[in-house]
Image (cartoon, rainbow, N blue to C red; front, side, top):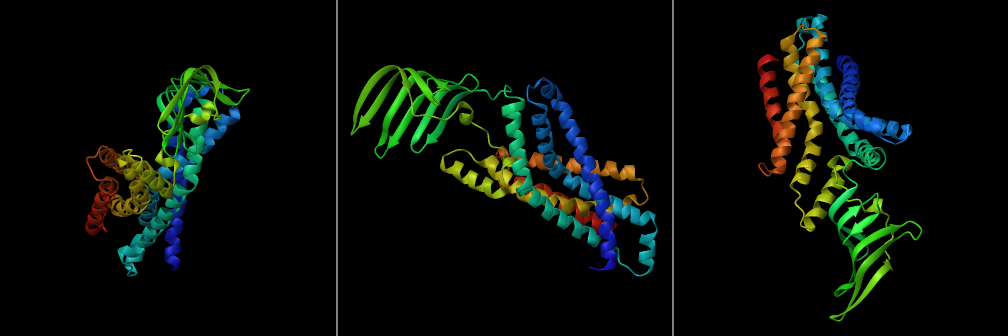
Length: 356
C-alpha cells in the first residue's frame, strides 16, 4: 500500500470511530428512554439492569456501522478538498479516482468486520440481553401466560396444554404422551398439572392414564399422579426465535428444521439473505458518499453529519421495506434482501460517473 493510501486511510478511520460511537450512543439512548418506565418499575437488581444495558450496546453498534462509514467518507473527502490537497494533487497529475479508491478499500474492510461482528458478538450478546429482559427485568411483560402450547420434553416424549402459566407453575388441560415404535404407548390426560418444587416434578390432577399395547387401550382414572416430567416451568417457555440471536449458519439450519416440520419459513429465508446483504451496505454507502462529498465541496461538518443521517436512514428504511415485502410474500426472499443494495449501488455508479 502506498504512502498516499495510508494517508487516506487515516483520514477515514478517525471520523469512522467518532461516528460509530456517536450514532450508537444516540440510538441507544433513544431506545433506553423508550424503556425507561419499564426499567424503573422493574424489581431486578441494579447489576442485572446494567448487564442488560451493556449487552445491548453491540446490537446498536452493528446497526450504526453503515452510518459511520458514510460519515467517514464525507468527512475524509470534504476535509481533503477544504485543505487544498485535492487541487494540489490534481495539479501534480493525480486522477480523481486515486483519492477515493483507498476509501472504498476501507469500506470493504469494514464490511468484513461488520459481518464478523454480526456472526459472533451480536448473536451471543443479543440472546443474553433478550433473556435477561424477559426473565429478570420484565418477567410480566406478556410472556408469562401462553395459550395452545406444545413441547418436546425428551426422547419420544411430548406435552401439549391449553394454557401454560409460568409464574403460577400451572398447566391447564395438559396431555403428556410417550411414543413407542408403534405410535403412542402411554398418555396422561388431566384437567390440570402443577409444578412441585419439593419433588422437582409436574403433578397431574383429575385425569386418566392410558396405555396402548398392540392396539389395545387400557385406561385408569386418578385424582393425583406424579409424572416423570421434570422440566421447570421457565424451561418450557416457548420462545420466539429472533434471527439476530443466531449466526447465518444457525439461521439456515433452523430454517431447514422448521421447513421439515411444515412451519412457514419465508421470513427466516429473508432474514438469512439480509444477513449476507447488510454488511455490503458499507461499500455501497461509501460509494454513494464519494460523489456527494465532491458535490458538497466546502460544506461544514454539520452538513456532512446531517447528510449521513438522512441517506443512512433512507437506505435502512428501504431495506426494512424490502424485508417486509419479502416476509409478506410479495417479493422472493433473495430479491427482498438484495434489491435495496442493487438500487443504491446503481445510483452510486451513476453519481460517480457524473460528478467524480
